[in-house]
Length: 199
Image 1 (cartoon, one colour):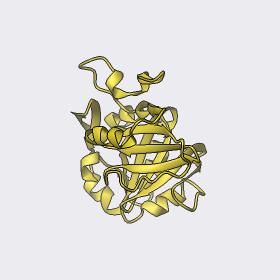
Image 2 (tube, rainbow, N blue to C red):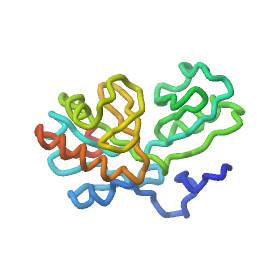
Image 3 (cartoon, one colour):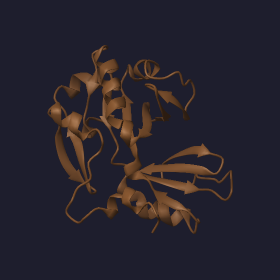
Image 4 (cartoon, one colour):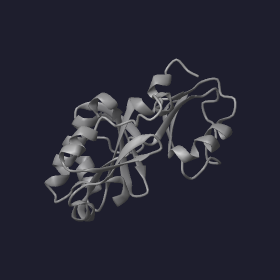
């Protein structure tokens, strides 16, 4: 157990599902939610089929996020599950992002690392997917290579590229704001919010 256990979904009271910082805005747009792995996940939103054909903006905040402090500044993460997305924050810190069902495998492969913090609740994760995803991303940030950190919609965050989509990581306090800005930029092109099942 770490000093930051309150950021882990497993630390919540039994029977209480976690919600992302973006849930209220999605509920206002008519999102349908399902409980999955301890989270209320926005699975669908009205009009998402049309949106995804251009660019869909989805909330993936329910993915588990582990911060790993690295003793070796250049470890080999290639052998880890294909479900895991690794992002090097600095020479000695990395984030692992993955579905909750892969957590046992990830922790086993991480072995006896001195510090692994579950920071799932600390980050909002927004996905941009579709033909115009890069156009929307360019309207949000001047970051030109991925993965990388920098200013996104005037707040600090990180951008990762995954399976033809872009993932934006921002502190959960800014999650709803960045999601709304991304939806606004996507709407100008004919896109908009989508649920996780549309991806």
